[in-house]
Length: 209
Image 1 (cartoon, rainbow, N blue to C red):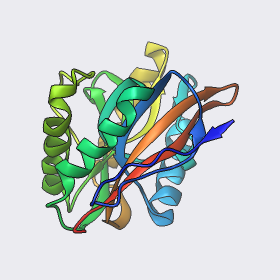
Image 2: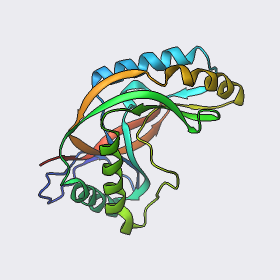
Image 3: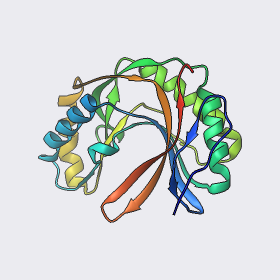
Image 4: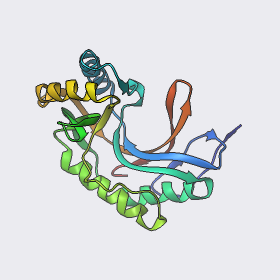
């Protein structure tokens, strides 16, 4: 059954339909456009030939991570969306370029491969800080590492693949994957299926409006 919750919020943060559940695995992000999606997918295809044990992100799931929240109860979901909207209400839309390949925890020991940011990097960092601050009092999951704007390309399994990829990352430090305009912050719900994660829009908050 699909339920439709609404939030009375002046930033026009809309809750979209979702399957009823007691907990929702949630994250906050910026979307990517078709140009970046296509070029990022071509990049992943090139890297794929050098690694035999990577769980590659499906292109339709590409996004700029702002905050991974984790499991949120149904009772917290409306508050979460409202707080995110409040946190970003003073931000204006900005140009955001996808540029360069990196990895967590480091390029020498890649476990998570990502596409980074060029123009718009500082704006995304500030947006992340605002979202994190707005959610701080909700006692939700928070990241301990330094925030780096990124689009996750894949997660590495065996160390043999990691060593091969480490040698390739430096070749793509100047890779250009296009540019978009960040116009809204999106709260996503993540649902596990047989085919992997499926993301559903839970709420949206327009920047500058």
